[in-house]
Amino acid sequence: MERDYLPRMKKYEKQEELLAERNSYSKTDTDATFMRMKEDHMKNGQLKPGYNVQIGTENQFVVGYSIHRSAGDTSCMKEHLEGVKKRTRWQTSKEHRCGCRIW
Image (cartoon, rainbow, N blue to C red; front, side):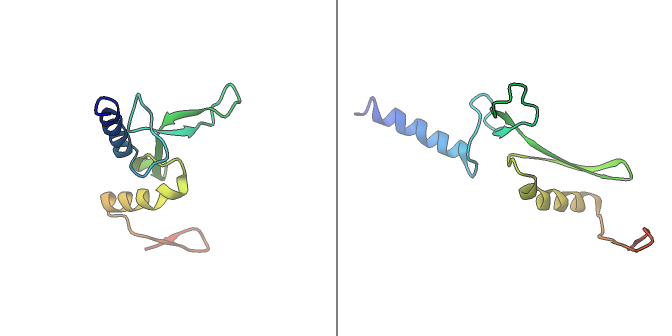
C-alpha cells in the first residue's frame, strides 16, 4: 500500500495544486490552459495549450496588455481594464454626440 498509494496520492495532490481554479492545464507548460483555437487546420475541435492575451489601444497606440489563463474574454476584461487604468492613470471619459470626449 505504501509503495503504491502514497506516491499516487502525492502526484494527485501536486496535480490539484497546479490545476488551481482552472479546468485543465498542459503537462508541457503547466501555466497554460487548454483552449479551442480559431486556427484549427484539421477542423476537429482539438484543444491546444494557450494563453488569452488582452491588448488595450488608444489612437492606435498600445496602452496596456495582460495575459490570462482563462479562455473567455468576458472573464478577463474587468481585470485587464483595471490593470491598464492603474498603470496609465487612465480616467474614464464620456463621449459627446459630436464624437469629442469630455473628461
